[in-house]
Amino acid sequence: MRAHILGAVVAAVSVFASPAFADAPKPRDVLVHYADLAQAMYGASAATAREMQTSINAFLDAPSADALAKARDAWKSARTFYQQTEAFRFGNKAVDEIEGGVNAWPLDEGLIDYVDKKSYGETSDENPLYTANVIASKSIRIGKKTIDTTKITPALLRSLNTAGGVEANVGSGWHAIEFLLWGQNLHTATAHSGTRPYTDYDQKACTNGNCDRRAQYLKVATETLVADLDAMAGLWATKGAARTTLLKKNDKAGLGVIFTGLGSLSYGELAGERMKLGLILHDPEEAHDCFSNNTQNAHYYDEVGIRDVYYGRFTKPDGATVTGPAVADLVRAADPKIADEIDAKSDAALAALKKIKDTADAGEIYYDQMLVEGNEKGARLIQDGVDALVAQAHAIERGVAALKLQIKMEGSKSLDDPKAVKKK
Image (tube, rainbow, N blue to C red; front, side, top):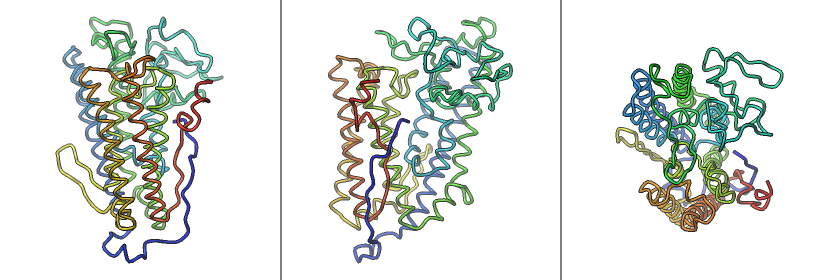
């Protein structure tokens, strides 16, 4: 995340004593339900990740094209539920402390495994570990230290995250597993995701070498992700750090945490860093799920998560629903017109991202193609999504003002100073 503070909405007088709030839920009940919702959503993410783990282990036990396809499908399914949790980021420090090892991006994949050096390059001025290839190495050098990589462990993978102070050094999490399942995406005219063969894991008919270590890395990376997601769900348990910290805050500060997550994800992170930046650079590698070319779904389910948190609802993997008092109820009690505006802008954002999703899912224009310079239709789809997300964020700001709260939303140079991005 490359972010800075966008600004603050400040007001001094409490609105919660207003007669308009007579039928509204109590702010404290909203905060408690928010914590309950977080526990349910992270719990669903951990549960679906364990299902993915089962599929990956089955593939590693008996590598085949069919087993690899099932493991990839399981990754996509689990990814859906993780993306919906991202609206809990930014305002909750305990979440962000774990999140860096879970969903860090972008990722210099040459740190982990072999790459096509003709397209990827041999070296990087910014990253000494650009082609370290841990899977093929028994040791790597990080600064002045030589790190033993003979045994692939969760501790080793976590130590690779931001190694040498480089954010693109990522050893664990969703995108490390994604790369290991799909391989490098060369963004050719005929391939819009990685095309790693299942034989990269076949011990008897091994391709590209080190199949045993590659299997070990994938197995450990998956175990590490499941453990991290369980920990994130645990943050919201009865005595969990995130729940405890939130509920110790006064009502206004607690509600500010909720809105900080909603606004920051909508504006700085999703509209800016994940969408507008790629459009400015015309770089397919800026697609968030670039190895699987699943970016359209990642973006769409981020928006689903924003709406889940705002409206206080969530549909579990088994179809059961979780509902309760939400900030949407408080905004409507404070100012129905602003509530209507947020509803409309949120519906428009969901529709814009659904259009991107449907277009890419149908194969009409894949997401990486949308980013290519000269693809006017694809660029328009992404820009419409950016515009809708920005409008949603500004409507959320007005909801914050209606409740007389104070927040700071994450920004993005891609939105706030795009010329500075072009000069990079």
